[in-house]
Each structure stands twice: as structure tokens, then as C-alpha cells.
Amino acid sequence: MRELIENNQRITMVTYDFRNANKGTIVDVQPDNFTIELDYDPKGVLKSNYCEFYTQTSNGILYFDSYAKDIDGRKVTIASPAKHKFLQRRRFTRIKYMHDLKLVCDGNSYDISTLDISAGGMKFVTHCNLDIEGEYNITLPLSDEMSVDCIFCPIRIEKNMNGETGYTVSGEFKFTDNKIKLTIIQYCSKRSLEISNK
Image (cartoon, rainbow, N blue to C red; front, side, top):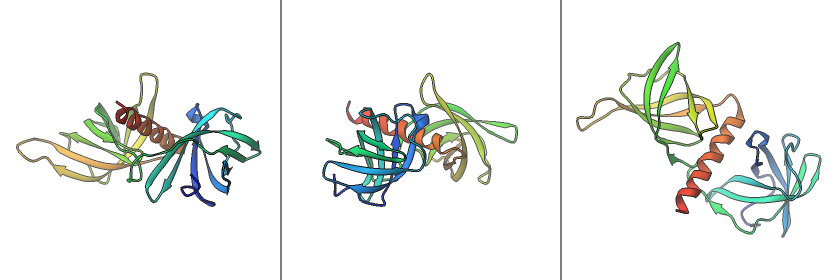
């Protein structure tokens, strides 16, 4: 594990309650633990309670779960995990995400059928002619109990070929709340692991 994390590396810490997700910087690495200096007070972090961790490496996103051995203000010492996993080489894990949803912009509503999603953005098909310069509000259902509101900005709009009508649209999310981004990262990572373990 020591060769995968190092001082000054940024890391995301997600507690059981994702609303208490936090980011920080690794400030010390030892054989059996490492210490993070968090950006915010460690709300919801308890000793010996497992949390999820995500950090970008040259091999992709490193994912593991572990627990806090010591909490001293914003400095939290984390036990070295028994195992870890690389989610994908791409910056954010992308998963299949099939839903019929609506984009809203300036009071107008547009029907879309999503294809895939990541914390970076999504791809969908639509029969609507969208403005590539527009910013669209969308609500993404992540479970029966939870959904998140995002702003979607198109990057590429391609007319469907082979006799299919409509457009395939790819774009990125613009976040006003970093916790929403962390929620989507966590959702996509968990779904990716569930699919790979089937």
C-alpha cells in the first residue's frame, strides 16, 4: 500500500452517511497506517468505524475501505487496508445507467433516455434539438430513496445514423455542491463493484 499513497496526495473520505464526506491531504505514511489532514472537521468519523476512500493514482482511481485509528482535530490516522482495488483508468468510474428523464432549461422540458453516467457527466439519446451552449437542470435517481439534482452541459451532440432518428448527446456535470459529486462517485463505484462481483 505504501507505494500507492504518498505525502501531499489528495484523498476523498466517505463515511456511512455520505453527507459527511470529506477531502484531505495525506501528510504521513507509515507501514501500518497513514495520516490525513482533512479540509473540514471530521464530522461523522468515529474510531474503528469503516469509511470508503478514493484517490487518483497513475493506475486509475484507487478504492479501499478502512477505519480511523486516531482522531486529533482535522488530523485522522487511518489503518492501512487489508486490500484495495483500482476502479478504472479513466478519471471517474462510468457505469450503464438506463432511465427516461427530463432536462429543464429556461422553463422548457426535454425528454431524454440515459445510457451511462459518471461523476464527470453522462451520455443519453433524445429526439429533442438541444442547444449545445445551454445549461440544463436534471434530477438523477440513485435509489428508491435518493436522487440528486445536477446541472448538465452538453459537449458533443451527434445525429443518430443507420436510420435512427434523434441525437446522441455527451456532456459534463457542473456542480454547485461538491457533496453531490461525491455522492455520484460513491454510487458509480459501488455499482461497478456490484457488477464486477456478479
